[in-house]
Image (cartoon, rainbow, N blue to C red; front, side):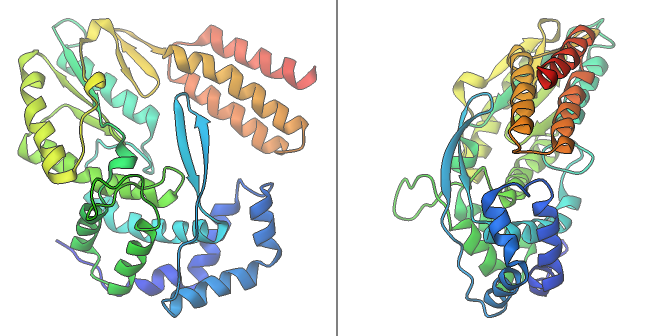
Amino acid sequence: MKIYKDLYWSIISPQTLFRAWEIFKSDKRNKPDVAEFELNLEQNIFDLYRDLKNETYKHGPYRGFWIHDPKLRRIHKATVRDRVLHHAVFYVLNRIFEPTFINDSYSCRIGKGTHKGMEKVASMIRAVSKNHTHPCLALKCDVRRFFDSIDHNTLLEILGKKVKDKKVFNLLYEIIESFETSRPNLFERRGVPIGNLTSQVFANIYMNEFDQFMKHKLKVKNYARYTDDFVIVSDNKAYPEGLLEPIREFLKSRLHLDLHPKKIILKKHIQGVDFLGYVILPHHIKLRTKTKRKIPKKIRQSVARYKNGQINEVAMKSSLASYLGVLSHADTYEMTKSVRNLFWFWLNE
């Protein structure tokens, strides 16, 4: 296994921090805290660099708020200074761990994403069902309170297998320990904030342990995962049912995670497999009902923000294009026409 030393400079160098800033600010120029940071950009970046160089950096506090996406989620937002550092850390960590990930994990990876994940599950179903002519079932599961349950000690231990630079490890410790959601006892700290970019790569690194178990220990061929949601496709009911106990045991003993008991769903493929906002059916793909309801609402909000001067025209049209992209991966010809018409109506009303 390849290990990495002397990584600290690649994270903390002014060049890396300024590059991180450019990426971070790209869609946030109208945010007051971002604009304030930019007023004294060079001083702020070099102050951050000096703290990192002197190993005196301390992660700041978080601001918590709720969003509906579509379910209610608690988001924790770090300061701009900390989020710039998160981008620098993400850039380095992702290069190290990306080659270790399996092909069929789809969250927060270049060339992957929700559309690719859905298409992979649809492809597995077609293959197992022999183009929908034979029996096929899909087991869909997710982890209960995943981000809130990530165990700090376990995450640090996994990171420490490859990251042997003590300064980098101490920095990762500072970021991870800056947040916790629950503490079952005095010796356990858990949780990473959904709002952190670093949490995305931490989640992939953490769940890669599970992916490796699924592929190499249980040797599950037809398996795909997106964050904490995963699907197993089989031609018989007994096979996925037999996997549930070893899955539960591994998640609990190795990663201190639990399957959500109400979200273990085993269905025949002809009933439709609900995954990543889509329902995969024989010969066609539908949008999940909640997704259908969300898209017009989100587009109207985007138009309203544009009219109020909160975002520019490029951002508004980018939002529209994003939702049209979601629609393009399902059989939604009529809805796509409707969304386009509503967009122009709201823009010109």
